[in-house]
Length: 173
Image (cartoon, rainbow, N blue to C red; front, side, top):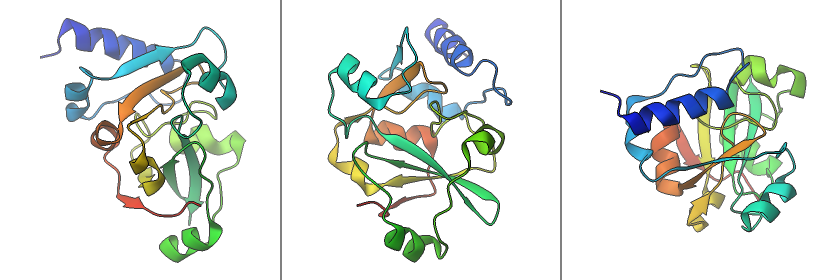
């Protein structure tokens, strides 16, 4: 049974994802974590990480990045700390392929979110999600929430529980 609070959260997330090619769907355990999740809606385009950092008064590493890659036409997301960068050597060592990001114009068709709103939840079924260990040093992270006007405050544990990653990996420097 969906509570009034859960219904409000669902409506907010659906409005965040409005106009996207795939309707939002949620893993059942996702709801249990909304008690402690803080959904933040911006009244401006928050595409710039620095705009969000100034608004929330958090450090750059807390506002994490979710980057989208292709390996043999299989889409995958890597969520990392905001100050982290992909280390091509580590990436190739883990995935046995050279890092190939999804071109901006194809991100929504592969992932379900457009650039600026890519997040590790409410993605297409075939998308694999990985969390980089650069996140583990943080108490809270702020991933995007489906568009360039929203973010969610989560602990690393909540992030892991919400997005059900394939694995924690070490591919950043």
